[in-house]
Length: 214
Image (tube, rainbow, N blue to C red; front, top):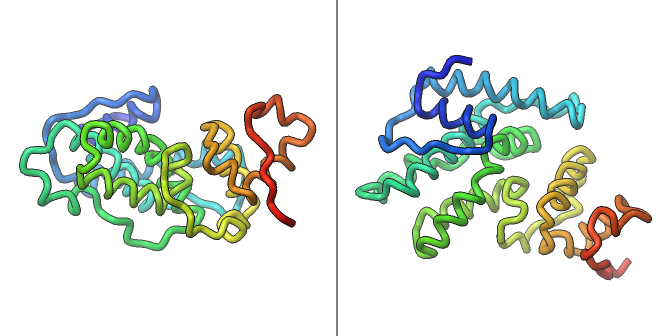
């Protein structure tokens, strides 16, 4: 796909190579750029959907583009902070629609990279208001925040992970990230141990079995 803007260049490079180029000029992303990004994410989503093959889950273009804008502007704001405080809500907008599994997985196409930016910002200045904004986003879209320290105490995990496809993806990412804080939640620990079976030491030798009282 031909790229025509810093926004699209950044997203394509990040998705293809895992690296990011930060452009120094903050600019409003056009509707045309959003449309091109949405089409691109739809293609990327279909590639990833081959891993779980669910007809009930689809690409939510709006959520995918929103996640990309959050990531793009967050990376820029790490370097460009002069006179930007008043624009944080505009540059890092809240997701307008309610989140469901499709929107969570669609936004994750970009938000999976957000914890790295939040960590760098937090290290530079833990009182930076942008850190709180990004952590609130990752708390709402905590699938993308697996491995980043978040307060998820209020989540009913049995309800949260009732969808089999989402549960499978969530557990796989916990293992991939070696997210001990999540893996030691009794309900999640029980699910993981059931999945590991006799091969627990192969998948995660150091993970302890947690009593879950049932």
